Image (cartoon, rainbow over all chains, first blue to last red):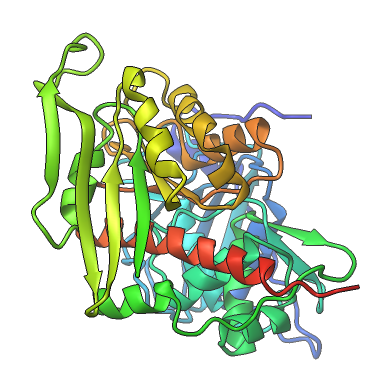
Length: 220
Length: 186
């Protein structure tokens, strides 16, 4: 059932609706404090559930997210470089949207793409099953997301069949860590499906195809 | 060796500009007076072909053909699509009904769709942010179950964006080809 989002009259009214989300705890009792902490929360918000998040960091300006509108506000440029901020407090109001779109919004996929690649140090995301086979349900908008040619090629492979992280890495000629970072980012963007059973087809490792020659021609 | 890439889409979507952006040579363009100014306010429009090319090394070319934007010239698609390695379909997001336009323009390319040899570039999304790429993807899935196409926001004047669009198409075509040619027998 789709619950209509609450829209407080003023942004300041949100204060009463925001509740602290306690950090998940690693084995051994160490709480998550990096991008993993936010990734775990965003993963629960798939299917466009309305929510507003306020994230405070030890070492960065605060971050605000209006999930259902697909916008975020942050005085930090989201570039291609991964970095590991320390989250000090994460508050969320479920079923809520901002009363209006604030000035200069940024598109949420840019942030989620960064978080997905940076979280879990390239290891399996907490919600994912090791050894699962993934396929692409929808392409990311590579026109607006910074990406490498290897990520483009892996995405294309996922658009044609289902792969485990290990198989994807082998097919694309990258490390399993690189493949896992892409899988986590696509998964967090809600673009992946999980398939059962064995793969029907196995790709040959591409070498010297038109893609590679065009990349060279374009100076990538 | 040569590779034929088609550029299709409704009038005003940026086919001619996209080819000019990518091409190494001055684009050969056949244009005529636009008799459909009520549809798109352009003085001229492509009625035959735009042609450009990208040269790779000494003996390899990617030939870029822009096929007509007006439906009465749809027969031109038939001539080239048999030779095409892939299709770039451009759709302008500020069209009256861009999703319907996309589906209409995809219909003649069923064979390329089956070969996963199609990429969609959405232009003018800076002017009209909706529909989103997710909306286009949902429409493609509904009309062509099981087909997952790359859908990218682009600016036909932007070389980096257009190269990304072309490389996405080539990566998809090659991934599909590699799988088809190396099937694992049960």
